Length: 103
Image (cartoon, rainbow, N blue to C red; front, top):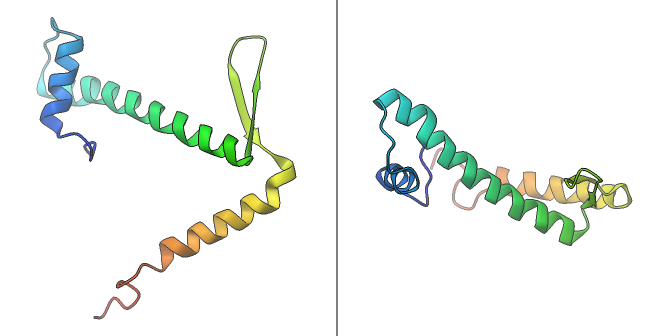
């Protein structure tokens, strides 16, 4: 499963630019290099999603003494969160033009 925003060949090149001395086998590249790139991309995506959810008030963020930020459900908005999830689920189930798969 390659990153839809970046061709696989570009992911390999990006890794090599960051690690110019790197060399590996086909399996090593697939398992380690590309995994590292995807984790980095996923962390950025999760960070953006968390920021959006905090902005909407669905999550609360608290900074702890260890310097880490911990995220959790804003219990005051739990009803609104449940409504949001039901609406999102319904929107995914009914896609325009795909409601009758026999067409």
